Image 1: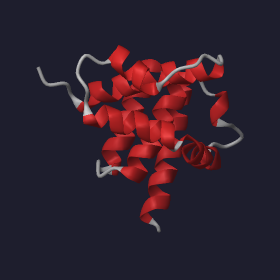
Image 2: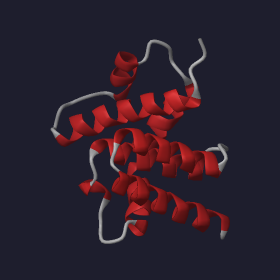
Image 3: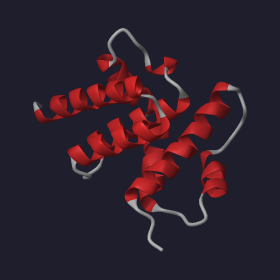
Length: 135
């Protein structure tokens, strides 16, 4: 059975959540160990998202914080951080249509977060998108 991109994004979100939890609790980990633990089959798309977020986290946070009004990404829950960072990474670094990146992030946030955070994620990703197309 083929795994949908939405399901792959969910799995990437789960892996990133675990990595953020470990990092913030000073638990040593290797991202590949988490990936191997979470995935039965490797997916290039999931690995691109996970490694892309981990390798670019500082840049992604700077972008997020630029557009978060009176807020900071570190104050968001780990799930919300994962969703927002993945959305920004996908818009900036992949050939996935920008609208799809935004829609997928909003869908994940509707499933795993609350309405206020979904709106916040939508607003930030919309600004990232508009900044990208205006350059």
